[in-house]
Amino acid sequence: MQSITILMKTLRRLLAGALAPALLSAAFAVSLPAKSTITAVTVYTDRAIATRTAALDLTTTGVTEVTFDKLPNTLLDQSLQVSGRGAAAVTILDVTARAAYVDFTPNDRVKALEDELRTLAKQKRALDDRSAIFALQDKTLTKLESAATAPPTKDGAPRLTIEESAKLLTFLDEQRGKLAAENQALATQLEDLAAKIEAAQRSLNQLRGAGGRSYKTVTVRLDAATAGALDLALTYTVPGASWTPSYDARVNSNEKSIALAYHGIVRQNTGEDWKNVALTLSTARPSLGGAAPALVAWGLDVFVPRPMPVAMDMRRERADKSVMLAAPAMNMQAFTTNASAADAPAEKDAGFATATIDHAATSASFKVTAPASVPSDNSPQKIPVTTAALAANPEYLTTPKLQPAAFLTAKVVNTSDFPLLAGAMNVFLDGTFVATSALRTVMPGEKFDLALGADEGIAVKHKRVQRFTEDTGLTNSGKRLTYEYLLTIQNNKKTAVRVIVADQLPVSRNEKIVVKQLAPDAKEVKPTPEGALKWTLELKPAEKREITLKFSIDHPNDVQVAGLEP
Image (cartoon, rainbow, N blue to C red; front, side):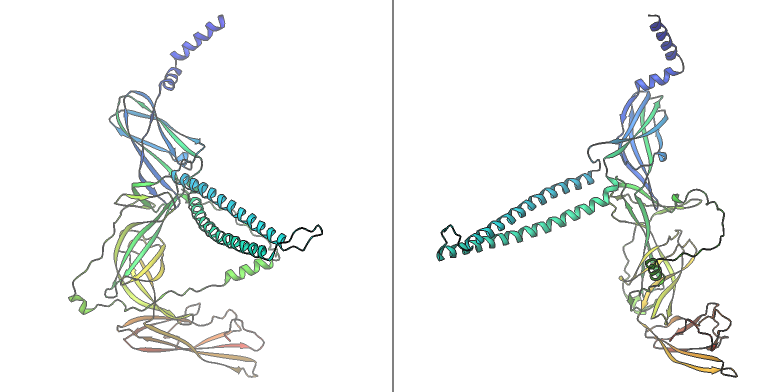
């Protein structure tokens, strides 16, 4: 009895002391489910930050636990942020994320695919059962035929007459014909069913990251001094989202300009559909971390050679070989002004939505003006960022030794306020797709080159005219090889063009091998340290220009030179 009295006194002291508010708030906290929607998303190259908002009506003062349920189970707990604004005077106490496991799939799209696959599996089992029955029937018919045509037995069993045998054969043919037709129909059904199962499985595999049998519930505890309305925002980071830049370069053959359309290709598989959200594309790369990497000790040691497996050596040899991809050819008139076009009525292309740009210290953000919807199924969504009309100075580049084609290139300055990140580019000439190219990262005000594909209007040829060997030295102790090539460039277009032609001389890596440039004169065309030569030609319409490249290679007789052309 005395112990019970001491316990009661201790309890009263605790309730009257510092623990009383915490115990009372836990006991009398009001639970309030948040009816929230995703209103804003910022997409990075490897993740996204989603913002959910909920309009709350706090009818009482004190502690309220607001719950956001069925959130993605992949959200990063450490990224949770809460903010609120409204008529109610509220203090945010804490925010907690807990995983919840269920015996069903929370993601509706994944659950629908799983149900579809289960239904298809039942249909396949039924068809497999029919196939097994057909196989048994065929075996039965074979046994009947074997019994009817078996040799007479010693027990003197009656034999079929000729008429009975004929009827049996007719029956067997009819039954086998029916079985063959039913088997063919069954095979077609199995084929169609297999295609449906494969399609559903592929879709499910793409959504697996958003599925699973768990989700997270986030609880926000609020302490309201006064009741009233409150807009609560919950922000969190989720993986499974990304965006990449994409460009469409539209070239008008009658103008010296390029209309560059800048898009962001957004994909996401976060487990939540983004419906009519304020979308922002960020150039920041949080995966790189906040600080530069630290150097570690750079140690040197004696090299100990190890034998390389044959398979590995072959793979490395294949990897070292370069593959040249020929760009799609196009036949176009370079940017010229057509005098007769001025009389035609002016036509305008439909425009694209343009994002607004916010520059930060280390990155830029593109805020899409119109609400965007991106489903959680990894499908690419093409979001317009901006369009820019850029002045262009066209010229042609050709390397006849490697490829007898001239490639149109435009020298451009990024006069827009947007940084152009590295990405794929589609080239359109007068509305027709002509080539696929790539764009490097270009900052505002920076000069860059746009590769616009090959043009068949410029004919290019590369031919070796001669190769001869002669003895040199007082005692014929050396050899001299002389090579001569002819490069032919012809402008088959109706306008004048500039063509930059590139070729090369071999470069000696040993003092015993001497390379001498014979034509053109080194004062006119000077090679780079790596032997590269360039000519800039201004060609009038139908003009043809021939370039002679000639050089000699001297070396002693006892030196075998590697790298010579045969």
